[in-house]
Image 1 (cartoon, rainbow over the protein chains, first blue to last red):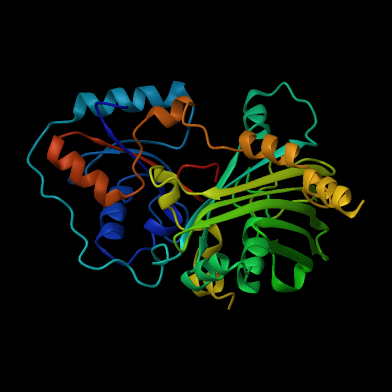
Image 2 (image 1 turned 90 degrees about the vertical axis):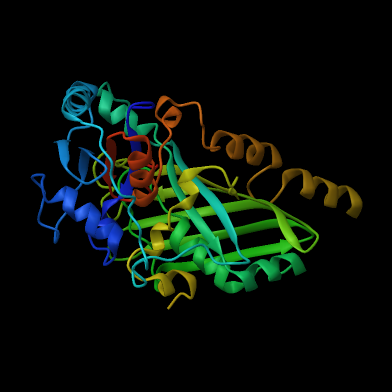
Length: 282
Length: 73
């Protein structure tokens, strides 16, 4: 995989919908596989040539199923001259880049307590998994942080889109009405707060305390470290499988993106489908 | 006495999380680059991947899922 393939990981929610050359190329590949109805998921493992000819497909992630897929692809692959794909214009409705002059913050999460013990190997993987997302801080919010202020919009974005259990599947976000308490204070570089989130009709909730540190230099934030440690209950979105049965302790950490990790190039999960809803809370 | 109280409050860190717990959790939740799957040079752009594959005449392996491509979505 490392040397004989070019490996790429994509969020197919975007790629199968994108109205641009990248989306066209992806659909060309996926159309040759069994999940070729683009109104529904096309998830899976695809091996293909640079000109988009499918060499193999599997929707099983086990080594026992993946190794034969890779071997078959290598046996059938014939190196040839292929034009490089160019994308004159990306789909402007679905895609956005990290805000210029803002910050990209790596967000990771983990359930540190609350799972029942299990001997099932795949379930154990989920129990130990770490959720991953990115927080976008806009330019004016970055400037406010440098001044020592913590903008309300940024507090809301953190609470609604990042204080979530995304360790299994895709989570539901919190609506504005589900933010029952939001107290976050930045004073002398120290962030403290408490947040209470509750989806009344579903019983899902997260009560948490936060501690963090912000440092700046030459007009820029150089440190944005924050930890949320709180008690959760329930599940939302597609996180039901393997969810803790009762209360659980969910920890979430924020830190400035390193700039070298490909995972930080993804769009925030909360921006999926409506970027202004994430950035402007519309 | 107020100075001591302020110092204690700083040491505790906040209403509920101590600085020690902050350090522990922040380190525990640092993304690891040592896991086996992170040693694969994943790209997250199909365009980049296709361009490299075309240039180096290699097949492409696409991990196509939902959520952050390099997370547990």
